[in-house]
Structures are given as structure tokens and as C-alpha cells.
Image (tube, rainbow, N blue to C red; front, side, top):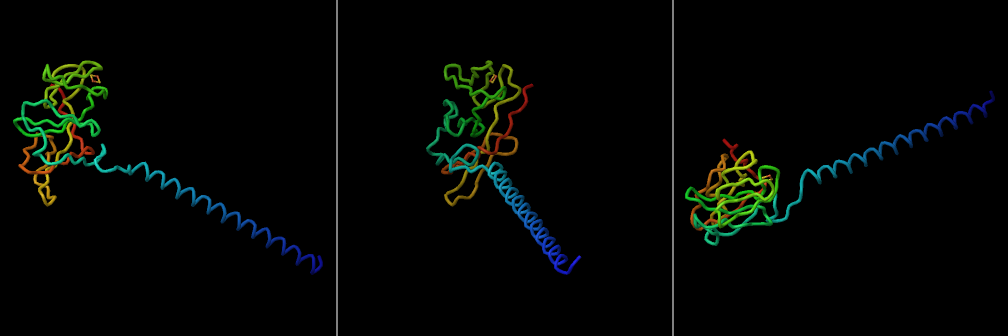
Length: 186
Ligand code: FES
């Protein structure tokens, strides 16, 4: 082998090495971009963007003075936020509008003073307690928060979802992302 042939062989090897390095870098860059894109998509699904007052997040419903607090009145429907506002002798409730059987939207029947699900006939009392039907438990409730004029929390639904006594003049927020399952039927 002459010196020229050896030099040419070395140049080819260098060129092949550079090509291989370039391909390796390109492949790594593509992999990196794909990983970043997949992570971004996963994050977008994991962290839904909720507008103010949308179902799934805090829903401000104004001052308690503007809400129906009559303990015998029909529940007030907040259809977009999927709950009923109900006041009872024990305090206020925000009851999820979805049946605990198979997820139908049930109705309030004022003449019968109870909720009745049109799908399979489950019935519930005004405060969401199970009466009869295939539903396995009471209706679910959302956490209610009462805020003073400075925005400080002055009352909040407890972990058991018991009715909340609301201080006069409070502003009410219903946390539709915080759902408390109803008690299983006896
Ligand atoms: S979904 Fe309501 S009773 Fe079946």
C-alpha cells in the first residue's frame, strides 16, 4: 500500500465516522424532541385548564344573602356546575346532580318532595339520602366554603360531608372538584 492509498483510506474512515456521529446526534435530537412533546401532551391532559366557575373547580355562587336558605324550599339547580343548592335544618348542602347508580341526571319532583332518577327509578330525599331503588348510596356532595369579606374562610364542609352552618353575610364557593361520596345504603 502506497502512502497516498493509506491517506485516502484514512479520509474515508473519518468521513464514515463523521456520518455515523451525525446520524447518532440527529437520532438523539429526534428522540429528545419526541420525549418533550409527549411530556407536554401528558401534562396538558393531567392538568385540565378550568375557567372561573367551571365544573371541576371552585364555583363562586355569590353571597349567602342572595341564596335560597328556606329549609323547606325546593333545591336550587346550578345546572352548568352540576349541583343542587339545598338548605336543611342542619345546614347547607351542594348535592351532585348525577345519580349514584349508573350516572344519569335525576330530577327534583316538587310534588313528591324528593329526587327521582328517570333511568331506573332510584329515589332520594331532599338532602340526598337514599330512599329506594338500585342506587348503592346517598347522593354525593361537594365541599362548600364560606368566605368573609376579606376572602378568609370562615366555614367549610367537613370530611363526612355534613350540612354546613353558614355565617350571615358570607360569600359562598362550591368546590366541584372536591366530591364526597354519599353514605352506602343500609
Ligand atoms: S342511573 Fe339512576 S337509578 Fe340507575
